[in-house]
Image (cartoon, rainbow, N blue to C red; front, top):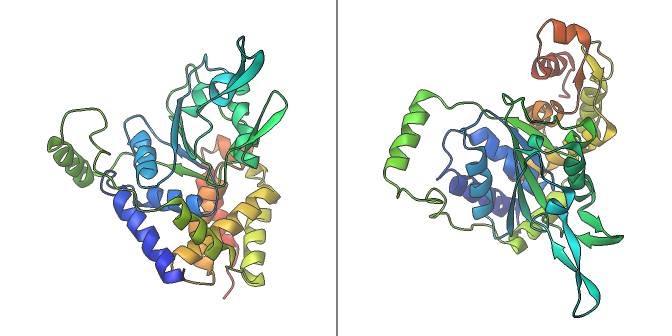
Length: 318
């Protein structure tokens, strides 16, 4: 496979998802980069902004097993991972696998589950395995979590801890679409059958598991030069040196940004990265990994604004 073929496959995936989800091009790009970079994505936005539809469309355009968990306050870890049930006929325990045993896992409204249940995903997201009754079970090379959460719902929600947020490659923000996109959505749905799943029923799989594995081999061959690596490190270390941020990004964050940069370069048909690749990924890769300081919170500044300021202060390599 060549870089041109890889870029063409990414374009085909982007176009297929775009058949059902309108006006969310940046979010779709983030999902595609995360897929090839072996990362997970957290989507945050108000209810009714197609977060779940986007995740389902993403899975429909891939030849991967799809699983969905609707997180609720009474959800237990066993409901996510599965449990061993004793079989009286065989006098043995049989593992009943939970929905986490899929390749594309939609964790819908993940912040509605209590911390104990949220923690059930930590090992799965970080290592690609889950431990049940002392036995490790692999989730495969293609396991990816696409999680959603609603920022305006406070009652019955449990904010994700920093340790779990750090497992997500990107946190992407979804807002209401502009008026011209919103009317296009209404016009499109007015022509579709009024039935469940009608939005994604016409989508075709455009990327097989074998295609994905071959594509990742191409990305593994992309080498970042020292100028780009030093630029990434300066941007990450700057989050630890400003009073606007109480807790800066980790070394894992720098490593994740570097991997996403390699994937972005390859998907653009290049065997080298440029500073603009890093700039494009910096805020979505860091906004959930930093904790704002008291001064920034009192002044009402967001993490995006603080990170944008860092991005403007750190000189990019030429």
